[in-house]
Image 1 (cartoon, helix red, strand yellow):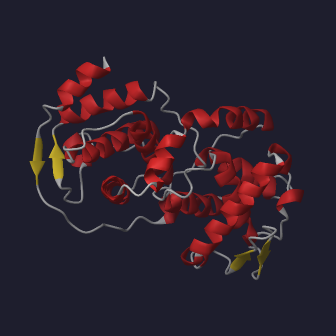
Image 2 (cartoon, rainbow, N blue to C red):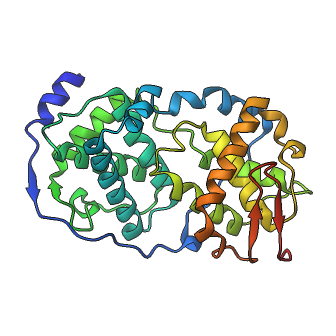
Length: 299
């Protein structure tokens, strides 16, 4: 089946229309909410299977090996996904799923190197699949999904062929486990009274996750590790927390705890722009012990 689909992709119709700048304007407050109330048992099951929803280790090594052309194409395609999400007001769940599909596909399937347009077609197909899964309002025509003056435009038939190829190569695992899958649970566990986190804190957390999705440094970490680090980072708005004493700390092995702390340091070192967008003021993260201190009062 995959071979037939690949042959069909070689006949894809495209229109070269040139480039343009990035388009922004999506507000965090408009991000999609609605997370299920997860039990610890469900979280443990997710953590046991989450590696099935990650790109291969070889793919991560390839990105770090210095293949500048491949990295540039990937970055350009992901920039378009983020641009399209901004324009269509798709939430961060859709954004993260799109990137997840994109990287997982490329880790198990080599696109024709001499056909640069295939990377853009993959980006459109991944966003289309993710939007169908997560969004309630999606453009009726696939041509309308392709916003922001991309270099290539694709007809619906070509996008649908690529969608089938993506589903086939991902073995139908579209309900992927990403850091977004855990964030509500971890934030709830950061609360002294085990209360559901506010939409504001979920929005901030999802923004942090989405802001890191395009980079390659976070691909080596498991989604649960990234989510735990983000929850600790954002919970600095509430109270001081020591990770080793947190209520979800037993879910992680000693090695994983060190990885979570490492992620926290990486987020903190690149997250100065995010601090100013939090509702309560400024907080800081200590990478050494990953305890979070707040200089603002709770609201």
